[in-house]
Length: 508
Image 1 (cartoon, rainbow, N blue to C red):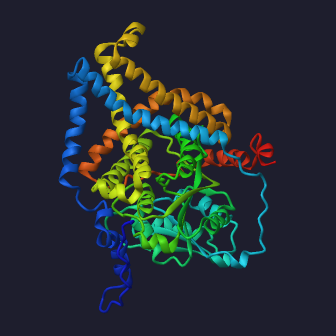
Image 2 (cartoon, rainbow, N blue to C red; image 1 turned 120 degrees about the vertical axis):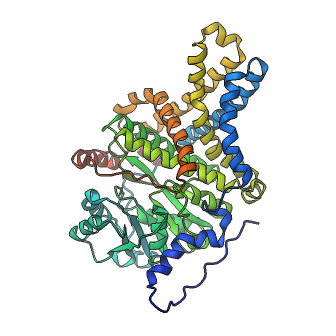
Image 3 (cartoon, helix red, strand yellow; image 1 turned 30 degrees about the vertical axis):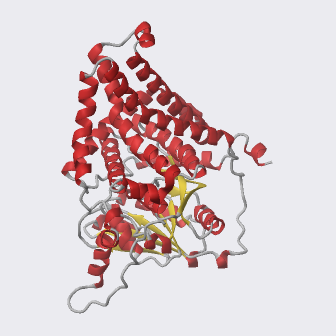
């Protein structure tokens, strides 16, 4: 029996000097932790979890440095398991990509039933994003959905006057409006989304980021998916592609990562019926189910992944649709590290929140999906933390030659683990990139080992950040190179609109 979240209290009419916004903000911040504190990252960790956070990193480091012989062999075999599990999921994603049918090009939109389409609310949280406002408004205006059934809410913080001024100057359509979130803490994207959700009137709700350029028919595709998916389908996730992949090393590697994740891994998780950690943008929800499950956790800095797992625990379905959104990746090293630190910190929050009561989680998800959660979230986090230790040991003892690799079990395990992990990642990236990215960028996949070491650095930084400032939202700036992005938009639009090789054969 899936857990239940207490129903939200009905809105009360306040008397006296308190405006409506105060109660709305209070619900945005505290609703989830009041109704279901075990699902909120604001609830303190259990004692055994705090102890684990302190002991495990020290134990891993000490064991790898001090153990010898059979002890080191067993310890290294244990640490190899998360790498192998993640590699196995990637290989399953490779098989799924190779076997699945590609979407049919140029599918015509049937407009006969426009009057029966569900109403839609699009939420776009913004903070210090005045640079991208003109292109954002144009992207939202291009959404192909009946205007009388679509509302677009641009969500701004109370102290962000520049973004609101840019929105007012951008020429908003009649179905677009600005929602201002009052001052308060935590100052996070999920808090803003929860606040605006109370003003949303649509049956369906979509979330886009400030720099997003969704395909015009994405809302129609999502609405069709909900109609076909049945009453338990709570959310559908569209695919994200990076439009500025050629701008820097960091944006290029993130483009490969996004391609593998949204075009390969998430569709495979959907096919395998495993919990899907959502991607933060281009999510489409049934509003009633979103409210029923408590909305977003304002204290979790990767609220999307947490919400995907919570929906699975509550017995709802999450699926992936074949529609794309262009997004801007951070091009500077400092911006990339800040964004990655926040993501990993939120993933750790998500894992700790849902593992407060492991037996309850197992009963909620069942054995198959519980194992999937451990691999997609738990093993992924652990592999980020353990990965650099191979190179540390190699530097400590010296790189082994072939004879040592063949005879020494420890080095053999390390070699097999790294080969399997990198091989599965490379294969998934190459296959998905060939289907969604210009092939001329494939050479940059050779830098994946260096990129993974940078991810490990961000993972250790995220651990420290989780202890020092757990709810701090490290802001990623967008529109840093608008002129360069404009040409990337045009080039990738051509890629999106171009039929993939073999589509016609697959659809015939």
